[in-house]
Image (cartoon, rainbow, N blue to C red; front, side):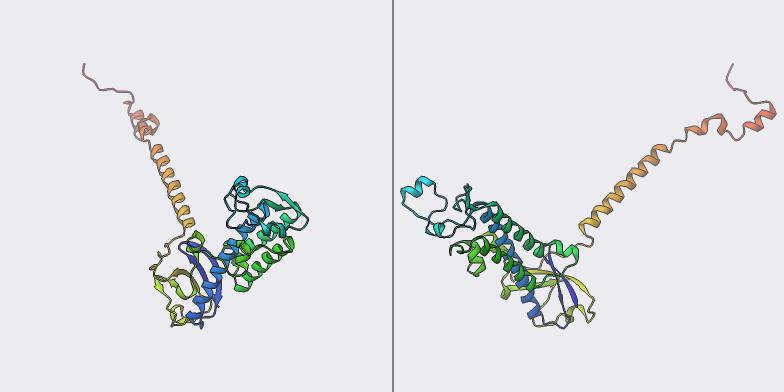
Amino acid sequence: MVLLHVKRGDESQFLLQAPGSTELEELTVQVARVYNARLKVQRVCSEMEELAEHGIFLPPNMQGLTDDQIEELKLRDEWGEKCVPSGGSVFKKDDIGRRNGQAPNEKMKQVLKKTIEEAKAITSKKQVEAGVCVTMEMVKDALDQLRGAVMIVYPMGLPPYDPIRMEFENKEDLSGTQAGLSVVEESEAQLWWAAKELRRTKKLSDYVGKNEKTKIIVKIQQRGQGAPAREPVISSEEQKQLMLYYHRRQEELKKLEENDDDSCLNSPWADNTALKRHFHGVKDIKWRPR
């Protein structure tokens, strides 16, 4: 199995294994699918953290309004009355005005937070350092855990306009958002390795050979964005170590230059003709004009 270290730009994303005989059409779609699914988990985790702190999403026509404005316009949060967390709620106002402030109690909040941490660990970029490959099944499992935690805390479900529910139902609208810019469409995805595009019409072995123990760094890119930057010859950590070595070496050379003082050669004990002059009796003769 060829080990693929997938990056987006210069940032590591995840490890993936694939046989050398894999069609690049299939592999490109697989990489894009795992990449986008990890982004979905991150978005859900982010919204669930807000859910644990401030309760469910307000209706779109009530978001950002003050209590006085809501009362004046006679608006009503019907879903807020239905979607009550298990064990009752604790009021904690959302300063941004996106959520209704009816947060779950401490026990239910911990259920959400613990599940969020577990899901983040599954899809974390630290899995690359640990040498753990991420599969689509692992990401789906993380999403299922998050969905289960929400069902435990909110047995009646979430409002249809809540971003968490929309993510679970694949109805999310990311147009015009920063999160939408990170998503790579499967049909538009490209894989690059060694400054070469891995064309979908070929196999992986056409580029990396038939050695199944090969490890390569591939970069995922949206079609039309051009070739990604090439990998540096040395990593940032190796560069730091190299600079540290040269700095220490310069300090050592400076100390040697400071200690390179030959004034001691003028001392009497350093005169190699002192013994000869002593026996000739010309030890302390000084020549100067009268």
